[in-house]
Image (cartoon, rainbow, N blue to C red; front, top):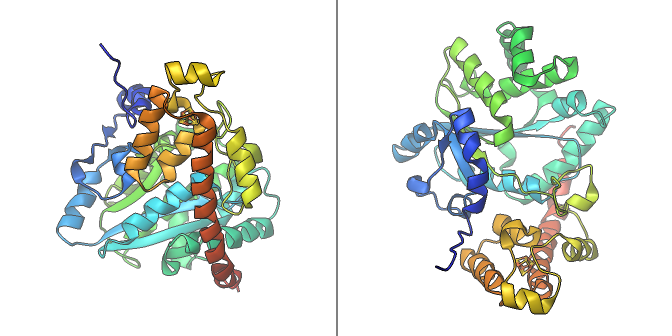
Length: 355
Ligand code: SF4
């Protein structure tokens, strides 16, 4: 019997044990959300997402919160987080909070030596966020929040013991403790009466951040707040085999401000699931499940039919890597060219952010 492949399913199997281990619910798009992230298994799991769906259906408000540590240039991996935030921000009943985590970046990232540096990255990141459609009024910098937010951070700290930190993170590094406290405050403070009050909230995170989510929910219980809901997304991996897309390793990432020559160079050098000779690939087919070029299309190309078509043609040996890379390069170059045009305008707004 012919082996059947599932273009959106392969990653799920790799995470099967994580569902058991963490006690997460698998995300099935019974919720009928209209974004390709949900159809392509980029969102793979959730905690209490039903509560958010209830609010959407009943036109009741819910909080959406996410954040980004401002420790480097933004790349395609960040774009996924921003796209998801923009998607939920379009619901009329969502109350949106986006943290530019400048203090977090300074405290928890070795390479950020001063707050000034973290703020410079925040300004840079902000211009990209605005260009991708994140609403300006939803964005705040940790270093510029109201006194109530900091007060709340200290209130949270009284409910956490050294042992809890040790158990969850395996260390009690002071900078990271401070950064974590702010992250709990980021997720929970919108529920304070000075902000939206006690209502359900939604945060999108990677599976690896689940211990953090669990501790945040534990804190919510102690403060008699709604337990925050989480949806878990896959991280886009790096361009080379076995790498993460990382701000500190330029060869693993396509940055949102990369010039077109650089985009092309990186895509042409990316790891693929192609075979050693064209003849062999035509005969046996390639493997798009391990291919970084296909992964870029899966995470970013809005046309599901096209992404599926390339997947199937690759499997059958009906397309070779050269042509496929060219399609990917044309798409990414065009998308980022338009994005960079927008950044020229949003940069002016971002430059005034800390003034
Ligand atoms: Fe990847 Fe395309 Fe080559 Fe298939 S043909 S392995 S999807 S680059």
